[in-house]
Length: 188
Length: 188
DNA sequence: AACCTATCGTTTCAGTTGAAACTATAAGAC
DNA sequence: GTCTTATAGTTTCAACTGAAACGATAGGTT
Image (cartoon, rainbow over all chains, first blue to last red; front, side):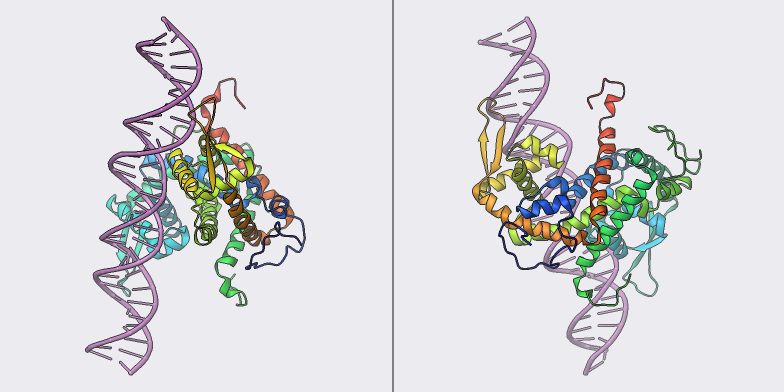
């Protein structure tokens, strides 16, 4: 299988897509060593995600004075009741410095509360403060309303399919992120 | 239709999702004024996109000393032969300062060329230099290979569906991005 | 010609970011 | 007890970012 215009490279984790020749857009590109960005998933995803984030952050920022980091933390706390900063890092894929700063700003604004763990003085448990809960009651409907507008072009089935396919991509990602567990029992 | 736990808000661009009750995840949340992030498309997209970008940028950065901005510009130039900085801004959703700096770095490294338009001295036409073309011949196969690994969990149909659904979302976005044309003749 | 407005790209500057250093706590080894 | 190593979260610092100001060019009006 001629993978890419004679170029050789060493680490090929998969040898071939057993179907052969599907994944049309990307594979077509591959055959001649060129890239068609419209068919390159990383590009498409980050492009769309960035546009959406930019547009959505207008709601967070202008109307509620929240950064994206702050909003994400609030949203997760609303869902999980209580979380450590470390867990938030994992959930949001933000680094701990960013999380630390956003958390501090939220605490200063009295939107969330911080409490030391009794058994491990290093960890702080974060949870929504009443005013944070109130704020979310205003932001969340707007965010959901806005999302509904965006996806109005999709049918119910398409919407579900999209989420499902994204989950699959996420799984593929996780598989590569932890290549050490290749033969492990698997925690899924 | 009870949209969100009694909260009222003024600008609701759509009145109802005529299907009613579909978009399960998001709409379920909406009914009780809470947000389930797993079903919130903006969150899912930016989360996955960020993880992918982070992972992919290891290839660009560590092995080829390219920032994401630089890589995007190279990839677009490979595809379009010649572009102005302005057009690159539109294509990549990056602001012009960022593009300007990335372009300068690429010119310094002799990966791209810059040439003034004869008729309009303000615009500079950018194109790949031979060494830039050579570099891409190395990077592109790796990027495509990496992508193939990620989407190996998807069937050919699923992969195409995903791209198609992303396009639909993009269209929804574009529709909202230009809300000024609501009553105008419409430039679509 | 002079003037006004618009556009392309660069630069400035203040705010944000993340890698690495750091502080404080924990837990195991001796 | 004292080491040593590990972990949670903070802070430092240098790099990056983007909004706004800028310089240069274009095109229209008078």
